[in-house]
Length: 109
Image (cartoon, rainbow, N blue to C red; front, side, top):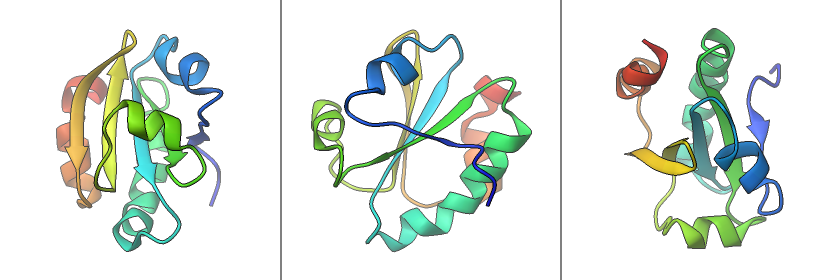
């Protein structure tokens, strides 16, 4: 799979996400999470199709617990959209690509 999404860490979160000029959807995931793996191809596709409007980033919560704790991520997959350094939308749970795109319509429409 071509890497349309970016991988973000505790160390790079502020620079990659909070200071980004574009809205950034952050997918909080873990390798052991089946639903997280289910939505990964959809997020890759959205990243490729809408890269001019939104950045799709992934944070592995096992490797980067600080960011997950800071934003109160209790269940995964959770996807937060950050704009101007703030969470402006939260999407919880695995959904089909079309449903994720509907949730993101205000950012990619």
